[in-house]
Length: 109
Length: 114
Image 1 (tube, rainbow over the protein chains, first blue to last red):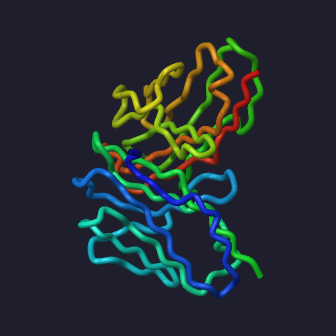
Image 2 (cartoon, rainbow over the protein chains, first blue to last red):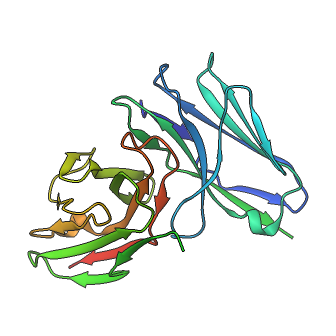
């Protein structure tokens, strides 16, 4: 089983839609959780950290479910500019960051 | 401007011809690392460094070398490149030695080994 797993998608949604991605992780001792955004073959950039109580940044909401070992990212009112690959990142075994393979989002007009 | 730079951005080479990809950061970060990204596999860590003169293997170190003689620089060396090292490479830095905080990535180096 991979340490971090994501649905590769693609998720094709219309502008204005709400879309959610989940990411499961295998290390129950993980403490650091992030969502990164990567535009086509460019460098990943931090979208947001994920805190135990959940956190929101504008149209983006991140949640952590420790019992089921997954994190989620919710995007409301999708924009064309949200089209990208979203990478789930968790500190795995060996206390190093492990990147998921990414979920592709395509927002269409 | 705070940034991580990599050079070259694109490289085509032949099997066995030694090459070096440079990486430099101007944020005084302690932690630096190299990743490769291949379709469907995500980012995989090659090597990392928690401080000057301290380097360690990541998940896929075979065929690569690194050095950290100065805090700002972390070059990646392929002594004898092979076609299976064709990939997109990213250098990243992070503020503290543990490397579990925000990773700042360079723009990437696309390598093709013929």
